[in-house]
Image 1 (cartoon, helix red, strand yellow):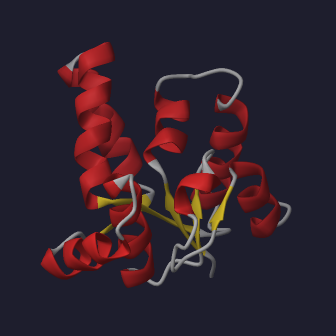
Image 2: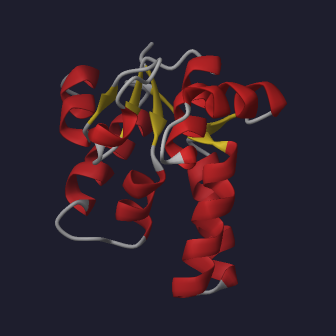
Length: 139
């Protein structure tokens, strides 16, 4: 089964109904719900999503959103080993480095993001939501 780490931006496209990206991100999420792949969120991404949803829509909405996400997605652990490996990458965007290493540690096949350029040199390839959806195949 294809394992995908979802970047925070893709998750927020769905939860905040960010047009025009919400349609593709929602289709990807639906494919995962149907069992065509397995999705992960980085542990630090979970807290970021909660913070941003709570700030935009309120704490109660943020809690419901996380419950819905976690009913479909697993969490890619972020521990001291992941943090050290991310630091060793010496990327300008440390959050992207942590995502890349967490994806590798969780044996993900790809990171799904709208900014693949932020993942140059990643141990796991970065692909956009359309490519991820195509990779999961027709449903």
